[in-house]
Amino acid sequence: MSIIILAIESSCDDTAAAVLRDGIILSNVVASQEVHRKYGGVVPEVASRAHQENIVPVVDLALRNAGVGKHELTAIAFTKGPGLIGSLIVGASFAKAMALSLDIPLLEVHHMQAHVLAHFAEDPKPALPFLCLTVSGGHTQIVLVKNHLEMEVLGQTIDDAAGEAFDKTGKMLGLNYPAGPLIDKLAQTGKPVFSFPEPQVPGLNFSFSGLKTSILYFIRDKTKENPDFVGNNLPDICASIQDRIVKILLKKLRQAAEQTGIREIAIAGGVSANSGLRAGLEAMGKKEGWNTYIPSFEFCTDNAAMIAVTGYYKFLKGDFAGQDAAPMARMEY
Ligand code: KG4
Ligand code: ZN
Image 1 (cartoon, helix red, strand yellow):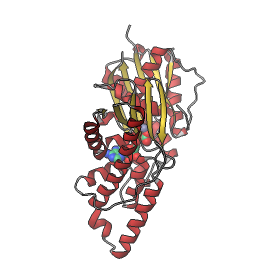
Image 2 (cartoon, protein in one colour; image 1 turned 135 degrees about the vertical axis):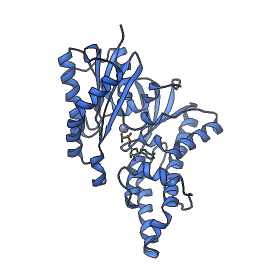
Image 3 (cartoon, helix red, strand yellow; image 1 turned 180 degrees about the vertical axis):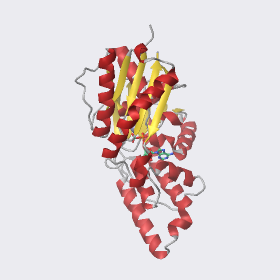
Image 4 (cartoon, helix red, strand yellow; image 1 turned 45 degrees about the vertical axis):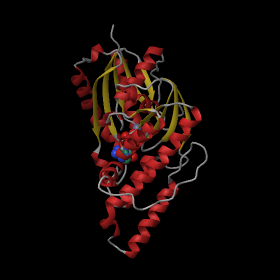
């Protein structure tokens, strides 16, 4: 008999649902909440309300695209955390109610573990063990993936995440939220002519808050000299910011590869959509003799396919959640 899993992701500002059959993704639907743009960041209360509005049509569409009826489902997976608690509660409550009414098991999934396992939603799949640089709006981690459900964080940011560094510096430049993709686009027509200092953080940890401050002062000082500085140099400023962030990330990733001797190297999370990081990893991989794994764009940013894949491995292990399952804003692996 086939294992068919409906997965729901609602940890931040994307309402997503996906259907998986026997490890293969049949559908992957995401409704992004444009409403946050005008506020310059995600407003938690607004996000919860938008999830509430989106969740039924998104789940309906995921089932329809997969050609699966709800009575054919074997289990329902949902994101337990980490994330915005009000957003998580919408997805978790929906999943629990649906599992209860269909009398099928529930699977609770760790959002960051799911970003890593997004690599198993498509081919080629990394061989175990592998290293994954997981870079999103809330996290920056180097993870040692021992097997599908056993991961160890080798290093992480001690302050801001890489995605936050993109978003916050973009905001200083007057770019809309989320600024990461806009900086990426502008950087493609610019050159990294401005240099920003490299943070000195021991081991495999990261720091981005000093970089953020130095960019703030740089913009302030240059604008004092010439009020049109940002407008006249936007592509070069973006290329310089991106270049520094990518170099910080790749340097620590190479250090982790040297330390562990692992040559299977992956990136995951929203920032893995960045063209500079993707090209930089490929170039470094060639030089270092690594096998590199870069997710397709639909599996980089928040999606439910990654929740479905993680749920599938949990299903195979018999690791089910009860109706008392509760979402958590913060969560260890
Ligand atoms: O994984 P994700 O969708 O959500 C979280 O779990 O946080 O990541 C969102 C982050 C945002 O900070 C966004 O600006 C960043 O990923 N991002 C990018 C790009 N696409 C998304 N950053 C740089 N370049 C991109 N192309
Ligand atoms: Zn995410």
